[in-house]
Image (cartoon, rainbow, N blue to C red; front, side, top):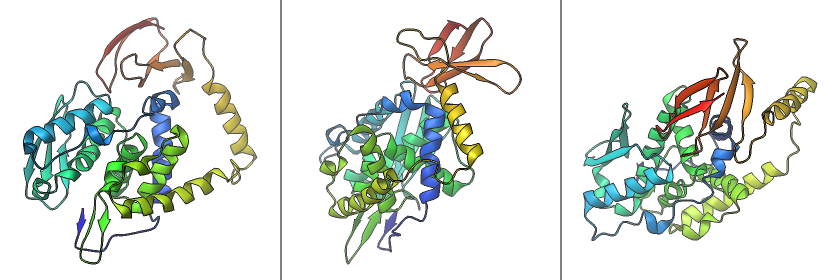
Length: 295
């Protein structure tokens, strides 16, 4: 969180942001990402000055846990003086302890933004998805928070004038706008109607321009012959598998000469991958549901 200091602008992390979006699709699958078509709504994370601080923070945390489909996760929120905006202890669960900066005691409208980032840390921890290095991993977290429907809160927390400034997260305001626009193009959503910060809207418009230019670029322009052949092969393999009503199966080799099958969890839609070896018992890493199936 920057306060009374300069806010970085532009797109210095764009390569990592794009890699983060690609990593989300690879780990979650297209079908799972489609379940996040509806963003967190302002009314669900609203925090009035008259609300009890701790009860209100727990309520917002529960709403974000529900949005990310983490039913077996309980967040315990506390406040203390600290350098960063927030911190979460990533343990085995199901309880996770989140600390928020004491500043949020009087800036309650931004508690939802801080919690959105910290709950995403729990989500990615459950997925076992991370980038090497603290900086890149935080960029992954901001990108995932935004692309999966809660990051507009982080951009709306950006405010800047001649006397002071505030920004949450590791992305620049324009990069938040870029990821929001990428999401909007996929789901047909207009997040700008939720902004209370005029600076957030300006950053979103700038990011949207870059996202639209991305869509005008022809695919695989920088790929050679081998890259295009590999892309075509992957597309064919992605659609392989026995058809069954209501379930999308995908088969792939595991590198050891055996075949693996993946299918969506009926509770949270996260894809589960198991070896093809008869009847198996698997636990979803995300929602902790236990499933038994014949492979």
